[in-house]
Length: 423
Image 1 (cartoon, helix red, strand yellow):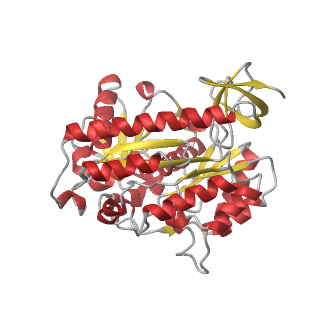
Image 2 (cartoon, helix red, strand yellow; image 1 turned 90 degrees about the vertical axis):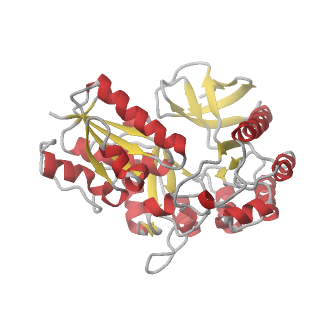
Image 3 (cartoon, helix red, strand yellow; image 1 turned 135 degrees about the horizontal axis):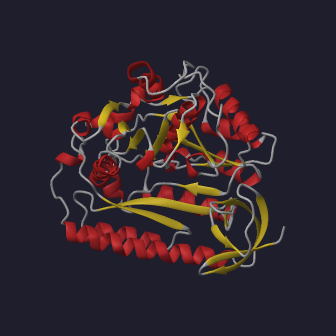
C-alpha cells in the first residue's frame, strides 16, 4: 500500500487544498507517513514572497536527501508560476499547476500507478468523504475552501496570475461539505478563499458571503464557523451584525490593511482608505469588545518613506487590534510593483518590520490581559493540553482533556495565556 505525506506552505486556502488531497489519497487506501518514510510526498507550494519560494526549494532538497526513494510532486502557486524551477530539483517527478490540483491524485494514479484503486477523484467529490476526521493533517479544525482566484489587481501580488479569476463553490455544495464535516466530528470549520469577500458574485444566481454566513448561522450541531481573512471593503455591517448575533460564527476578524498611509494604499492599488479601515475596526470593537481583530501589514513597499511608515505606526497606536502579521515587501517579477523605482533599503525594511512586530506583541499582550477573568468556551487541540477560543486565544490548560472537545474555561493569566477547565 502506498504511503504519502503532504507538506503545505502558505495560506489557509492551501491548507484546505491539502486536506482535500489527503482525503483523496486516503480514499484510495494510501496511508499517511512521515515525509522521510513516504513513497509519495506532495509539496503544496506558496509564492507570495521570495522567502516562500526559497523555503519550498530547500524543503524539496532536504526531502531528497533524507528520503532518496521518494517521488516528490510539487503543486500550488510556485508550481504554477515557475514550474521549471521545480522540475530541476532532485526527486521531483511531476509539477502540477493550481488548475490541475483538484485532479492531482487522479493524475498520479493514471500516469504513475502510484495508488491502488480506481475511484474517481474530481470536482464532484465530497470534501469530507472517506477518512476525513478531526486531526487529519495534524489539524483539529477543518479548513473549507469555498472560493478560489482573485479579480483584484494589487500592485505587489502575483497570486491572481497563479490562481486565476474568482470562482466560487455553489452554495449547496458548500452546505453539503459542511454537513459532511459535522457528521465526521468536526466542531470548528474555517471558511476560506483567495478573495473570500467575492464569494458568490460569479454564481448564477449571484449570492454573497453574508448570505452564506446567514446559512451557516442556522446550521444545527455544536459547531463554530470561523471566517478567514477578509478584505476591508468586503466586510459590510450586515456581516458584522450576523457575527455579533450568532453563537455559530466566531467573533474573529482578520482584515488585511497592508499600510497605514493612503499614499501607499493607492500605490498598492488597495481599494479603500485608512479612514475606512479605522471606522470598520472601531465599529466591530464597539459591537463586540471581546472580538479578536487582526491585520496584515507590508513594510518597505517601493516609495515608502520614513513619514509614510510613521503614519502606520501612529495609526496602530489608536486601533483596538489584537494581533498583527508583518511582512517585508518582496519583489515578485511580473507585478506592477516590481517595476517601480524608489526601492527601500533592506536594513530599513528590517528595522521597520521589527518596530511593527513589537507593536503587535504589545497588542496581543493587551488583548490577553483584557480577557483574564472571563469564562469562555474553547476547543481542545494538539495533545489536549491546549484549547482555542472562538475569539482566537490559544490557552494552556491546567489539565489535559481529549482533543476536539468543547470545554468551559476560566482564563487565569495572560502571560502566559492559561485557563482552568471548569467543565
